[in-house]
Image (tube, rainbow over all chains, first blue to last red):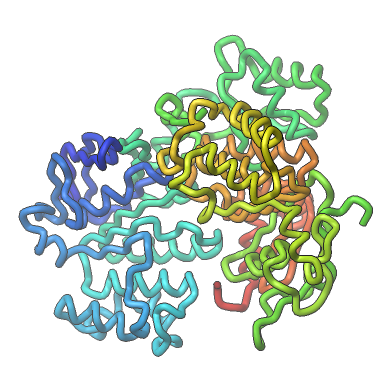
Length: 306
Length: 247
C-alpha cells in the first residue's frame, strides 16, 4: 500500500493556481523529496495532505485514509513539521514534548527511542522556554514533537530553509536515520543539492511536478552533453559565452559555467573561439549534470523570468 | 586604505559576557564582490549591523564609505544600500510608488527621480509593471526589484543579507548578473548566502566561525589551501570547528 497517494489535486487562491491537477504516490518507507522554489505550491500540497486545507478538486489518501473523510485517522498517523515554527513559545522544551505526547495518548518514555538521537542534543536545555531557543534547537524540538507519537508518515515542510550548510547536513543525517526505522518521510526543500539524498524527488514549479524520479535516473535522463567551461576572466566569460552562436544555454555553477551546445557546436571550437576573445586558461570538459541542471532544463519553458 | 570602502580593524561587539564579534579585521575595495559567510550564530548579522551603522561596536574601528561607524552612523546609513530576503519592498505600494518612496528617503526629487526610475525599469524590463502592486509580482521579480531599489541612490556599497533564499535557480543566476553589473559600475557588494555555489561568484570570501574570521581569500585560493573541490567543502571543514551553539 502506498503511504501517500494523490489523484488530480487542484487548488486555487483567487486567480492563482497553487496546485494544478497533481497526481503522485509515495511508497511506504520512502524518503520523498519535493524540490522547488518559493511559490511552487509545496506548502499548499503539504496542508492538503495533512488535512489542514481542502483541495478544490481531487482526492488524497495518507496511510490508506482519505484526507477529507477520515481526517481524524490521518491526523493520528502523521507527524507534521510546518515551515514556520509552530510550537508553544511560552512552554519549555520538555513541556512542549510532553504536551504533544499527551495529545496523542502516549508518553515521552514510550517512544523515547525514536527521538533519542535528536532530543539528546537539546535535553540540556529542557527547562528553557521554546521561544528562547536558537534556530537550530527549535528545529530539533519541532522534529522531536512531530515524532513523539510514532507517526507512519512524516511531513516536513522546508525544514532546512535559512539553515547553514553544516546544520543542513546534520539534519539530513537525522532524516536518513529515521528512514531506517521505517518511517515514510515527505520533505520539501528549495535546496537542489539536498535532492540527491532522497529515494525519489519531485521537481515542482507553478503548482505542477516537472518530473518525478530517483535522483540518479533523473540525472542519467539529461538529454544533452553538459560542458563545464572556465577561464581566468569569469565575469567576462558569461557575456562571451552568450554571444557564441552555438551555445544553447549557459548557467553559472560555482567555479564554472555549465553549457550546452547546439548541433554545430563542439568543445574544441568553443575553446578556440574563447581564446580569440582574449581568454586565457580556458578549460572545456564534459561533466555529469546535477539535479539543479535537470530542474533548469525542465523549467526552461515554464518560467516567469525575464 | 586608499580605495577601501569597508575597513574593519579589531572590530568587536559584546553583549554582556558574550562576544558576538571578536576582533575582526579586513578591507573591501571599491567594486569588489565580498562574500561574508558563516554558520548560523557565527556573528554575521551582528557584524553586518555594525557596518550599516545600526549597532555601535564595543571596541575596534570600522569605516564604511569613508565614515566612522561609531561616530558617524547617520552618514554611513546615507551612503549605503541594504537588502534582505525578509524585508525588501512595500507590498501594498505600486512599483513606481516604491521607487519614489525610496528615492525620496535618500533625497532624490523631481526630474532626477523620474529619469532614474525610467532608466531602472527599462534596464530590468519592468516598464509594463510600473502600476503593478508589488505583492502581485513573482518572488524572483520582487528580489530583482528590491536589489535595484537598494542601489537606486548609487550608494558606494550595498549590503545583501541572503538575497536569493527560496528563489528559483534561473532567477537566482539572473540576480547574480545584476550584482556583477553593479560591481562593474564601481558599487562594492557585501553579501551573505547559504548557497555555497554563490560563494564562488565572489571576488573574495571570508568565513566566520564563533565571532572570528577564520579564513579570507579568493574562492580559488581557499579551495587550494583546504584541498577542497568546492567552497561547500571549505565551509564544512571550517564551520565544524565551531564550539558555540548555533544562533
